[in-house]
Length: 361
Ligand code: NAI
Image (cartoon, rainbow, N blue to C red; front, side, top):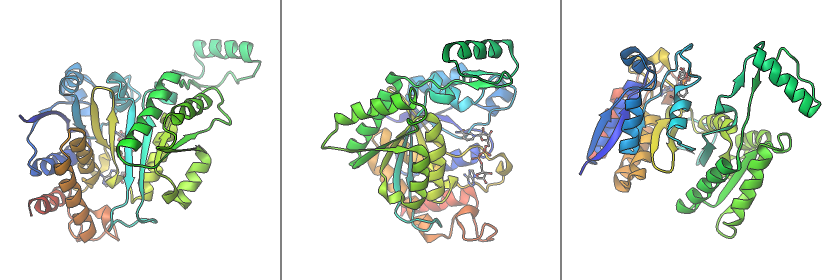
């Protein structure tokens, strides 16, 4: 029986990197029936909707999706179609491994970090009050009355909700992940010294969950600003990091930088029932249709997907093929060459061809 998987090719470079990824995944011999559906700018142009219900229904039915990056056009009523998709499907855990591959130029070798980012709340909840609106002024008046703190009336306001429920499920996810993947340590990253009732709650819940894993997984705490410095100085001291939404977004890009850039950083958005696999990078519109973008992040997202559907051998073979192509440094895209202007850099499709050749050998 083939695996039925939803495919969202994506916008900008999305189609090219998704096509490269599906070809590589199929080359492993795993039988997959793709259900190709639309979201983002492409969907808006073809169907009049950014996130059609039929796309959500396909993912709900198949439980697994591979997704290219999506562009959210301004003025469409969505802050981000990606955030909307994660919220609509309750994909509460964002998993972003940051792993060194030999042959990639970066400051450090042998980095093997896993970022677990809460995906459903925090400043990404989309609860915002625009400067100058009557409801914003009314809210400011109410806050001043309740807290005796002054807020300028020409302020915009974004709300940061952090719940016990969502904090517990993400921290538990991080510890379970650590246990199942033989990792040693989970570090909870926060700013609880300033935001006592939001980050403070996240930290308090993390301590409670951690106590259930005493003797199995080491628990550490780190303030986010210090964490940023520690990561650029001593990234090898860390293992699995669990963070609220905003810090998770920022720190995962920092970690992508540590391993050589967005071109090789994969990701997954995981819920209780289903998961959507996607690269950390966006749709890089300037490279659209140029056969230039690095397909590795998308292909490695495919590796994570293969593990999720229990196709471990295929996942290992595909990751090994990617490793070899990068280590050889010949059939790689411009961003993996010592000089980005290097004329020997190959295109997206040709890098995928080289990976497929390694799988078949
Ligand atoms: P971006 O990640 O698309 O591009 C930033 C820069 O990173 C690019 O100009 C390029 O130099 C480099 N880059 C990214 N991916 C690459 C690849 N595969 N190979 C080689 N170089 C690569 O971020 P940006 O410019 O902030 O966003 C562009 C659009 O993508 C926006 O509409 C944004 O909303 C969307 N976006 C979508 C995401 C998603 O679908 N998950 C995530 C981030 C942004």
